[in-house]
Amino acid sequence: MTVMPRFDRRHTDDLISFVTKATSPYHAASEAAGLLAAAGFRQLTETDEWDDEPGGKYVIRAGALVAWYVPESAGPATGFRVFGAHTDSPTLKVKPHPDTGSAGWRQVGVEIYGGVPRDTWLDRDLGLSGRLVTRDGQPHLVSINRPLLRVPRLAIHLDRAVNDGQVLDAQNHMTPLWGLGEPTEGELIATVAATAGLDADDVVGWDLVVHDVQPPAYLGKDNELLACPRLDNLVSVHAGAAALAAAAQEDPTHIPVLAAFDHEETGSESYTGAGGPILDTILRRVLAARGAGVEDTARAFADSVVMSSDTGHAVHPNYVERHEPGHHPVAGGGPILKVNVNQRYASEGLGQAVFVEACDRAGVPWQSYVNRNSLPCGTTIGPITAAKLGVLTVDVGIAILSMHSSRELCGADDPALLADAATAFLTG
Image (cartoon, rainbow, N blue to C red):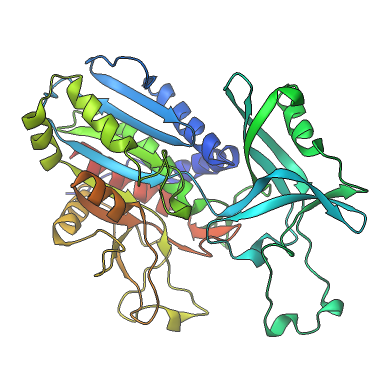
């Protein structure tokens, strides 16, 4: 039987728009919520009592989003199908006292957030986005999406050995500049506050990151590639939101869930990260609203599965020797199953069966990824979520190049293939 795909290149067009707006984790959570709200989902507040009405609902907690759809047929022991992702990406984050400078240049103090290949942030036009918090405790999303900052590289004339190996010191060499003259205390926050119509004196906290303002673009002779910032992991957040909205139009046998966490790139140990109780708490509240007791909750979790989606490594044509010889995922080849015997990825045989069945039902090709034995393996929210919930978990994603760079690369059709597989999973 021929399966017609649900998503196509228009999904990637929408991803481009999504990534352009989702310049920080807070914007990513907000934009994903907007996609779901347009599909009829409604926002809940964690401090309110939740009702047992069927339908789509979501919670935003800072840079994290958890959304779910309760079908009419759901009972107190109905299990979940959770599609997991993360909203954060490696970047440079503004320090508490950001106004600094040297040698006649005004600069902005930053910290390195996550595993940043530092040279990819040199000589790029950078904007600034995130949130400001006012004295009343209210957060305000802010974004300056124009060239504002730049981390200039040292001219080759002053470092003739740069092509023999460059070392960029995180403290001394990664401080962006944004003007001439002496630094003025409070100037940066006042500038950002003004863009949001806020009084700088009313701003008492901020979480601001830099972002590359060059928009995503199709690449290649036939536009078969996508060059895009923050693919890791907004491609999964966007696919998950699209899949959950699509699942709500079906008659799912389980409760489909999107869990988009923050702080994955720094270890997930936060109140909005996969290492915290946010997902466990929300799932239990969803069940409790339907009258679930201890026995019902245990049965629901035993009947649940998590699909953790994050980007993986496509085989690099210039560094083939860095990849496991028998596993060469390629861009455009469909989503990948990520396996690691030391549980850096959570996939095992049972989870693989769930993934393969979803891809088959969606008519989507799939690939396998295993890290080279001689190289250390990265990890995801998968093992963390599996351990927190005690739920069967499988790690998947799409294959990309330049992971963690300020600008990454994927096959232009892979985002849609991932969304198709995610929809099949959530409706299964």
